[in-house]
Image (cartoon, rainbow, N blue to C red; front, side, top):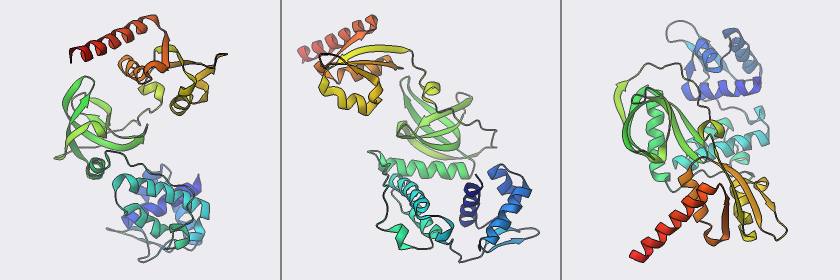
Length: 303
């Protein structure tokens, strides 16, 4: 939408100070003619944007100018503020709040007391995430490789990656980049990274495919289970899978049917219900669950 592009152009100008029309055209994937029309529309809206020709020239906003809050409605400003504050909750800083103050021209109506949406993305890993996010952002901006130890189900390995995107998805932070080890684009979870450092080695940016973040692409499924849970487990099934994951039986028990991707994680998940759930299908997985329970029992007997 055009209004989204106009707001995006303003945000770029506020952050970078001065940019060229070709840069904006490439950034927003439109023609230079479209960018020129956008700049004209912004000037008509009362925003003092100037252009300078020649070497070192470009498009910029007059020094000291703050965007009028009349450009956006109150609800739009509050939605933007909620998103920016959510990033501050991860970083442990106020840098996005400061950006919001520029966008809202210092209006206390937007900054204090009237927010109806509060988003907190912080986690137990907040302290380490802040440093990782800032380091990776700097590496992306300066086209520097990053190196780290990565932990996965297959063990630990040393990776060198060309970072392109920081992504918040599935309630966790990831970096999407070209892995020198795998010779392909990979998604790495920040919580599994240790000894992260930004390399002195630069890289020439590749044509980057956007990561396919559909659950079916990353977690292809393949393990269809059927289980019965006690009625007191209803809240947890709803929280984790939604109301459509079970059918209530005549005796009040919950018949649960779902597709899972990882056998080990599935068995671990079932064990957390203790005696409140019984796996019905598939039969071979029932055998694995019984074996796991027997190993746990033997472990406790030995100790």
